[in-house]
Length: 366
Image (cartoon, rainbow, N blue to C red):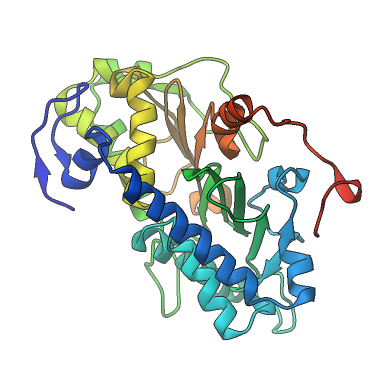
């Protein structure tokens, strides 16, 4: 996966084998795609079938319930079934479901973010009985009946982690996908020096420092960094305009770092999902349509922000809180968060309605 190979395709060079695979034409046999979809459905239903009636009432929602869009990354009370209220078998089945959508790397990153809650609780001197910070205060919510033929989705969410999966007749989206780390660099204790989102920080800073002074004048859009990712937890991500330095105005070494940022994002999901996302990017102009923007200081420990964005993709990074030791990192699809584009196409082709149901009046199992 880490091997670097030269390749010329839609302006891309010096990509890893993983990234090259994602750029190749999608010639995956339909039978193989169907098998992946069926595995995801079966694994989801295995998890559901392991739950008792009370657990199901917490975990399962109608697909069109507005709760599907009620996402956030702050510590707060949530709907769904959390890991604290699952037995060991159910936890294994929950993570087995996660592992059908995320890569091993992505699953490990999610678990590492959960474990940061233990460190955060110690740093905040919270008493043992206080559960504001808890490594199992992460909720699984299923939307609709997992099926090969009908849309369904699910969400894993807790503090600094929110990944929103949508499957439309086997085609999958995973955005909004949010990853956070507080502390970004563990200051003390047994885990001192641990940086769960190390690459997310280092690649962005490495890129802005590699730019020439004239390029930096274009790429640095603000002297001070915004207090958070600019799209927040909005239902729909949008940018007023593209800003920063165009990919086509970078040299090969600089372009390689943009590629590595995208590879970092896509390597959190399974290869088939990554490939589908790369094809969306290609159809919207490829790498040549992307921009890189930076705000704030270039120095470690100072407030900073960056984003990579284009017609469809938005990757945002912000590190401003807690003396710039608190990372927010999010992947949004400007056209297809929550499977919006896929669902519109599905409803049009199937002739079914697209209205959103609200609350207890709907076919709502929660």
